[in-house]
Each structure stands twice: as C-alpha cells, then as structure tokens.
Length: 273
Image (cartoon, one colour):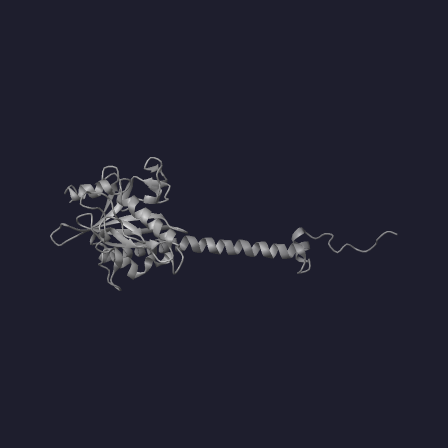
C-alpha cells in the first residue's frame, strides 16, 4: 500500500530542517561539540598571543634576578630593572675569547644562534649533552667603583637527569675563583636533583677554584675530593648521582677549552678590561 503520510520537511531549507531535529540528535550533538571546541581554541589562542609580551617580560625579569643573585647584589623588593643597569652585557666570541660588535647585545638570541649552522657547531665531544653550541654567548660584567672588573657572570647549561639545566656561574675578577653558581631553569626531581636550588648546596661553590697553579682545570662535583684537593671540590647532591654528574660535566665543559677557557685566559692576561 502506498504511504500517503505528508512529508513535514518538504519545502524546508537545510537550516530549518537542522533546527527542527531533536536536541539530542547526533547531528546537533556533534555541531554543539565542534562549535564549543572551536570557540575554546579561539579563546586560548587569543589569550596566548595577548599574554606573550607579559610572559616574555616576566621571563626576562626572572633571568635578571638570577644574575643579581649569583653576583650577590640582589635585594628583595628592589627595582630589578634599575639594579640590573649595573651590569655590562657583552656578546662574546668563544673562538677568540673576545667581545664582538657583530651583534646587537640587546637583541642577540643565543638559542636562535645555536640553531643557526653559520653561528654554531655540532659537538663531537658533548659531555654536557647540549648537541649544538653557539659560537657566541652573552656574558655580563659587574664593575667596581673604580671601573675595574669585580665579577664575571657566565651562562652555562647542560643535561642533568630529566632536563637541561640553565644557569649562571659568577667568577671573581681573576677568572679562577668561583663566587657562586645558580640555576634558573630545570626540571630535576624535587628533593633530589632539585636540591640544586638549595641555598646550603649553592653556598658550597663560593671560594672554590677552577684551575690549579699549572692552569689545569680541576673543579669537580663528586662524592670525594679530587687529588688536587678541596679547593676544587663540591660535594655531590645526596641521592642525585646523575644530576650531580650532569652538573660536573656542564661546569667542566663550559670552563674548558670548548667553552670559556680562551676568554678566561684573556681575562687573566689583562686583555679584557
């Protein structure tokens, strides 16, 4: 028998037919879900873009605070931007150990340089686990009232147990005595490798030396002191063998011939002023 029931959708457009569907129908459920996802993505994207300048400013402020702290001149509550004006940034050519005017120090991007084959090199011997090394680094000088160098702040980084640790080592004006070490970014295990942030452990670095009287690099992070003696020894972190080994590797790498050795030799020879 022929079906003579009138077709209620006849003569209606696609939108009208869609709106007439039950609320719990599959097409309407999918439509609402997709619309919400797109709206949420748009809100997150707008927020990420609009907040990026604030994030970059906070990141820069945190980096400056760490430089002030490792140099021992940070006072909580002070204007960080004004306090940081006491520091003198320079782009250092690691191959010559001298400053270069090839780049604007205010805009030089080390991470971008490390990814540029023309400005970096792949490391055949890579104890710090950094892969490629930029040929240029931004370092900071803090001067005394008479204009002579007081502290030298050198950026360092290297792989620990779970993450790459980024920090600074502060040296006295002789380029050999350590004033302090501080990491500003890492993801090591809290309570173990994360103890790199413990003030008591960081205090162990003050007064230690990089090289012996013969110029041999002796600094060591280990459970036992090296043959050269305690002047070159920092106790390893308890229960964090791999993080300690990573820090030992990164400090030796950056203070060695692949890192700042040429610059430090120039500094000790009076060629950096």
